[in-house]
Image (cartoon, rainbow, N blue to C red; front, side):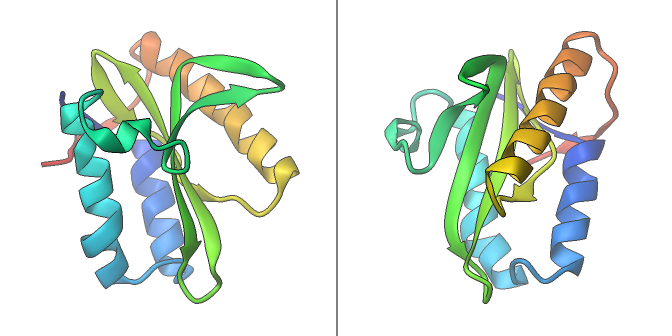
Length: 131
């Protein structure tokens, strides 16, 4: 499966990197390899791990085509990092974020739901593919 980097994903990556949420080494050794398992979706065993991968839901309703990659205890701040992924023939990386609390999670998942709709309509900017 192709892994599409959307403008939302690129902007979030740059913002999180600038805020020192994760180090370059953590990105190279953990985040990037984890994202690359999307090439083998759904066959890689990591997709069976609920602490790493789950369907995205908002107000107890599953977001169509929406999933989340999850990392715990990231960086010096020991934060929870999330990467929403839309699966529609290809994997579309969307706006990654730090899960501060449930209020933040709901707000960003509402944005992700909109991103999924825009992707379906072909109204997104592709910045590249993860290789």
